[in-house]
Length: 243
Ligand SMILES: C[S@@+](CC[C@H](N)C(=O)[O-])C[C@H]1O[C@@H](n2cnc3c(N)ncnc32)[C@H](O)[C@@H]1O
Image (cartoon, rainbow, N blue to C red; front, side, top):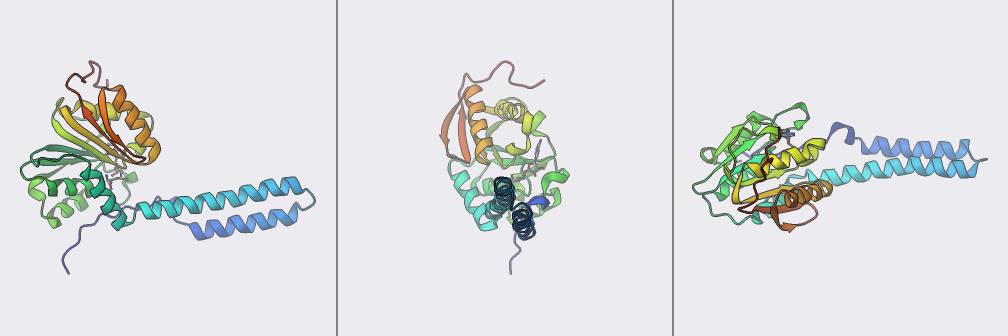
């Protein structure tokens, strides 16, 4: 069997116990019901809360299981990349590249261009590791078009306008209060006329789209989990680079 790239994305450990959590939540609700049956309002509220915790936890677990399924991820990747009008000679940056599922997808669309994948490779990266990225590039046969770097999106070391396309998948939601700083950096390193594309959960995409507009990008298309913007020639804000 041919070697397969490893694009595994682990669920956070705390979200991997749906059966025990469902059992504890149902058990606790039953116990509260019997203990507090003389106080029906309180019993109803506490039982309801206990069941709600179980239902929400299981719902989030099922949602993330689907999101991390490999077939789903490959389809989502292709749909995301299909939204960018590729020529084949672009200079591309993939921010928070992880194991490189997006980076390798871009590399396969390039004929002359190059794609840099950058990540901080922290503990919180799940299954994402630099050596897995390098191995994936070899297995996918794109190592000559791919470069891996260890850079934080909060402070990218690239020149203004260095890239034709900047992409980021499932990374913005990691950035918390630094999201604006990160989006500013992505916009700064994008050349006028270039494309910035972000794929993430709905609230991160919503916020990214707002920031893109505020930074002068034209939002070309937005769905619940993807936003594409183009940098207008007159976009570059004087203070776009964070201090
Ligand atoms: C959920 S993974 C997504 C990986 C890949 N883009 C994908 O779609 O599978 C998020 C990645 O963002 C990276 N990351 C988090 N904060 C970062 C930062 N400040 N700069 C660069 N990468 C970061 C993490 O290390 C992790 O590899």
